Length: 212
Image (cartoon, rainbow, N blue to C red; front, side, top):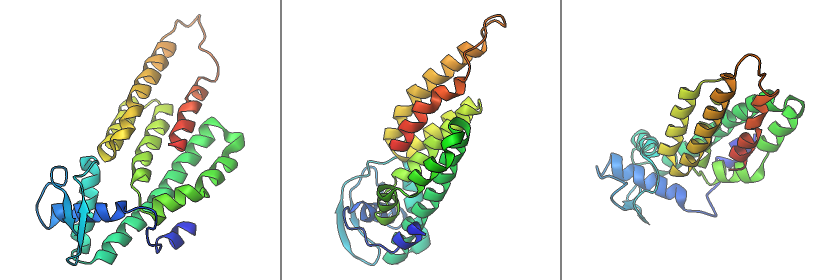
């Protein structure tokens, strides 16, 4: 409900959303590379001054898609980002709930409420339309896959997160350490039992991802 309300909020503490729109317009309609060229025009002929994109190619594909759908309509273009942010919040909440069920089942409801009703998360992801939530979906999905022993898929999602926003590449070394330790423990001789509750060792990793 809060996300739906914030879809209609004008970004008030940042101009990043206009940068997303301008870079998508630059790529789709002006046929220039946003990673090399500054964005100077919004749909409808409005002027803007944004530097070359600091984001990855995966995010630029999303901006280009939204620009193609909205064409010259600035309002529709901005609303697409807001709806996308709201959808990402719902998906992220589902992933957080899945991790809580695996790691801390006794605190599952508390974790879901604290995440889903976080004022800062809703304000920045939907109200201001920031793309960090899209990156964090990839990280949360990677952690969930790690807990299920699907290392390759987890790495693929971390790579996708880095291609959205480069800062998520920070989690790749943590993924490597976790997988190496996990494999070392699972290949111990049968006479040497592995420590109980090993899966909970990823708990600090999950908490770090949620705070990020």
